[in-house]
Amino acid sequence: MASTFAFTRDVFTWPKARNTDEIKPQKAHRPQKRLRAERIPLHDVRQQPTAQSLVPSIVDGLLSSPRELPALLLWNDRGLSLFDAVLESPNYYPATREWSLLHNVVHKITHTISSGDRLIELGAGNMKKTALVLHTLQAQRKHIQYIACDVDRTALRRCLRELQSLFPVATSTIRIQGLLGTYEDCAAWLKPNTSNSNSRTTLMWLGNSMANFTPHEASEYIRSFLSSGSSLIVGLDGSQDLREIAQSYEAQSNRDFVLNGLVHANELLGTDAFDVNDWEFMGKWNPELWMHEAFYVSRKDLTVSIAGEEYHFKRGETMRSIRSGKWPKGKVLDICKHAGGSVIESWMNDDESYGIYSLRGNYSHDS
Image (cartoon, rainbow, N blue to C red):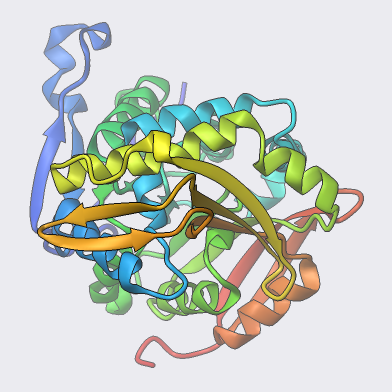
């Protein structure tokens, strides 16, 4: 049985968050005497509430050319459930490809993380991958502060409870915490920690999630994370097989996932601005960005009304929903170089169609 470990104040110093609460274990976590000891801190680091930030983005997207809606609309609690169906689809190769690679190299990846380090996962979704990494760290007798960051409070709470049941305080070397916020919120929250030399931070960004942004945007995210002194582990899809990409990203499960973004937009707007029956899904490959793009397509001439303003669409007009980059190793090296970082190590599957990369910054913390 692993020994217990107390994280000292000088190792893990939390920046002041806007709001902090605790998650009580569910009844299955008895005995009751341990309830207080096993509460899970959940830190609200949002710079503004999600609805307040997304509603202006919806309007801005309708005014932009070409039109688009924020991809964050896809990641509400229902969207996460729909994405689970995407992950289970036999056509969705990125999930099986990353899992196979991670399973083969997890011991090498975790050797880049030291006892006493802090591990922040960007996006709290796939418990299978998270549990594999944390179990490996625990087997290596490392004391780790694991922090899950997600924009959806309900999904984040569920994730933290599941992880706490796997890594109970009394017997585990893993300590579980949560951050409620966007990637931008997390990067801003990390800034005060740049002078804390006693706490190394590794950010883990799996699932090809970084490639939901353009290469330029991905470089900016890398820069924002690495400039805090953190290191970054990312999983990225490098497939160039357009047939398998289309089969994977244009299946019915993906269509349902994307169209739920319109439902979520209506919830945030407080009105049925978008009739889902008036829209259909379209997928398209963008060779300039090396990305697959998903669009909402109007089935007819229609008008979207929001707060007294009208936005007119012709039949067949599109709004972009989400992108997914397919970046081979050379492209990843280029993106990282533009961010002022370097790929320190990389782990690839046999045909190099999927990679996991360890990134570090090439600049001082005060840059």
